[in-house]
Length: 368
Image (cartoon, rainbow, N blue to C red; front, side, top):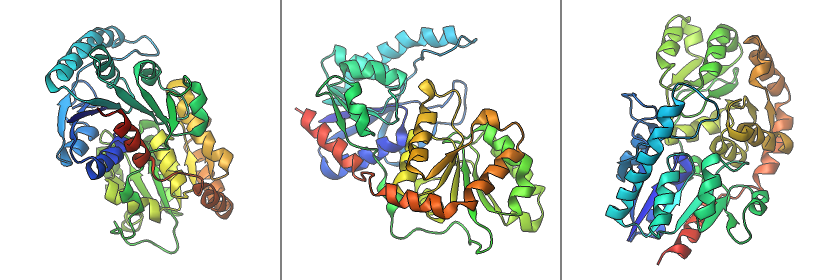
């Protein structure tokens, strides 16, 4: 029996894949996604690398998306939508999956619709505090909607949604992790990230305040691939002492991330659903800079969830008129670190850690 897994949120997808492999070993898993993050890229996408490294067959899909504003790419993107549906129909007809499991995003929409047309049941997971644009339509034809937040159940038709929590990879809770470098007792470790692809805005802020930042903190900076060469140039211009405080990565793998989360005193960066869920589960203190252009302000709502819990603060991008404001805000949060950390520890007890298992239960119910 075969299962299709698709969507834009690859980290929770992998958590569910690992659970399926453990519990439903008779299922042949096929992943449908983007081979390249952006059109014209020569660097393959993170999802392609991660899925391929698991030994899972990857079927690339080319499709378009509905954009929130009109740009030069709007019309070409719209024209790709029918192509994506035809390609998805071909995959479903050829592979004949028993079920389609979606993790949202524009890449999943044609796959789920193709399955619906051909009578294949689907299940989707909504990662964030709001219903994403693709999941709004996917949920209309899906048999089951799994949500990360209990208060989202009532958004969907009665009986369709189930609270599973966020699927979190078990590697993040490993009892033993390999250190990436030696920590300092004098300088707190700050982990700065802009999501899997990095944030140009956050990166430029960090580059502007790097010498001042490194006099007070050790920094792990996850830049994404587009800014990585600039970060290496900045690193080369630092003194030996400053270099010992600055650790830069284009992307942080799951086994490395387990140590980073454990070692870092503060997370600074974007507030995607997966990141926020992991921070909550791991009792981490955070300073969020929500992506202003995220659909329906979902990153703002994700961040506000932990602000309401008392474990995080928000610094809006539009309020960073000078990069020094970021440095000031990091200092302000760490000045009250014990308060934030206590709240984080209390709130983590409310976070379900078996999201992947709960989703696997729902998948099993839909199998023939």
